[in-house]
Image (cartoon, rainbow, N blue to C red; front, side, top):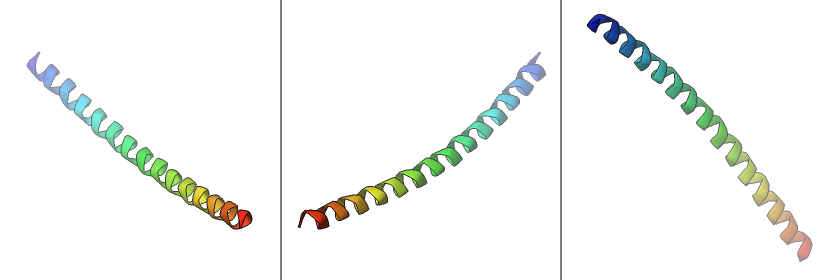
Length: 53
């Protein structure tokens, strides 16, 4: 019984590590996209400012 519980705990810890890694990877991807979008927004603002002058 105790070994079974220990094995289940080990499996759950492994699953958590895998999920944590996947979340970290996805977070990095999302921040990359956010950075790109911020740059696009700044370019659009600059273009609008130039047109208004």
